[in-house]
Image (cartoon, rainbow, N blue to C red; front, side, top):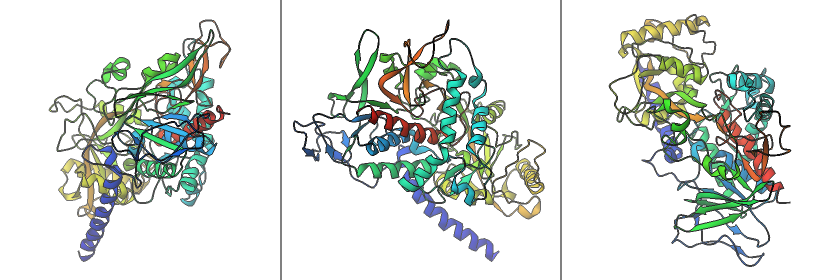
Amino acid sequence: MRHYYRSSLIYFVLGVGLAFSCVVYFRATDPDFNFNFNFNFNRETSLTTTTATTAITSTTTSSTTTTTGTISTNAMSKPVIVVGSGLAGLSAAHEALRAGARVHMLERAAKPGGNSIKASSGISGAGTRFQRDRGVADDTSGRFYEDSARSAGARLHSSSPSSPMREAERRVLIEILTARSAEAVEWLADEIGVDMRTVAQLGGHSVARTHRGASGPPPGAAIVGALVKKLSGDPRFTLSTEANVEGLVVSESETTKAVEGVRYASGDGETRELRGPVVFATGGFAGDAHGLLATHRPDLAGVPSTNDARPASHGLLGAVRAALVDMDSVQIHPTGFVDPKDPAAAYKFLAAEALRGEGGILLSADGRRFVNEMERRDVASAAVMALPRNETVEGTRQWDVTLLLDPGACEAAASHLGFYVFKGLMRKTKVRDLPPAVIEAVDRYAAAVAAGRDDDFGRRAFGAWRLPPGEANRDEEVAVGTVTPVTHFTMGGVAFNERAEVLGLGGKGGEREEEEGAVALAPVKGLWAAGEITGGLHGDNRLGGSSLLECVVFGRIAGREAAKSLD
């Protein structure tokens, strides 16, 4: 008993510390918080000067548009313009700076980070030194490629003449993503200084390869914070927030269109024009519930989302006839938290897939397991949505599913759990205080883990679960929370190629030979894209950890290519 109270005290102190850390880093994801990075913003006054050698550090405070760093301007040079400040945009900015270019980043929100800052499970990479340190020695980029291709499903093999992207083109993107995955993880660790030591297996992956920190803030916040801080120290980098891009500056000849810059509305109400090569990294359209989401997936009306409500940016690319692909491919994540304080809220906080990866299980309203929790997200979500809905919640379509973590999973996911408990999204309770049906399900699963074989649903990876079956577990503490499926990610978006160039419709002599009835694609000069704004990479389903990965891999490519165009 003395040992129990001593352990409880230790976990309480640890939980408080972790919760405080998560509060600091999660403020950008919650309207109740006010997130701040560890550097100061300067106020933007001017983007150009009349002399090539003048360096301007803005100190004006009247404008609401925010700029990071010192603006070094040159009347004869153009910056790489990065639209969006999530991980894809930040990665592009880093590489463009590294290539010698100036960078001007435009973010429509009040603070940087986008949806990337909310990422909670990590970034996937195959063949990293962190895997080897954890005893995962048999992973390769080829194995990761096969997992990703399998996850992409039927869309990968689609060969319709009217399809904007063919199987070969999709496979090239998957090959680049997986072949450069280890480099991406180790770049974040070695050059950006982000902890990547913890490695977990997520649904649809055949091995543990999703990386996050061993402690401190969740991975999205840690990565975004480190990158913004690093970029802010470069005088060639400018970050303007509350800067809403309203259109592309396009030049047109008889045969082609070229992007030469953007027009944007600043926080002070002025419309400005900025010239230079453009990298679009504005994210997906899962938060555009009454726009693109309603157009392409009207069947998802009423399903809550992990995305803040905001209009999508895809329409801006219509000026250059950018090809859109897989627009009806929308990821439903199986686990968004139902907040007991506001169960009908349309916005849900994501219950990280890492919670299941570390051993968590899902239970139906009557206390039974109903799916292999390590299945792909589309499979797990379909299993949840096959259960009876909770008809008592008005305004949203919800299912009441219990997410349960044993002490081992709680310890492995402590950096997440402390925050979830602090927010009231999960609670601790003893096994003996659970409903009888849940206790029975816990015992049955615990016995399966002990035997190393899940005969009910075929789960093979049990994470850090260590709870034994039977009376021996009744005084053990578990963590429980209610979850429901949520719209989370859009696999559809603008077509792009291995150089992260945006592909436009109706090009001549472009990416491939025209066939009878085929859609011709060609790169749009001056325009690149990376991250969730793009389509054609993930097909029917995105694997966990591949969102941050594509942001790094293709964001870096986009930044390098855009900078190269200035030569």
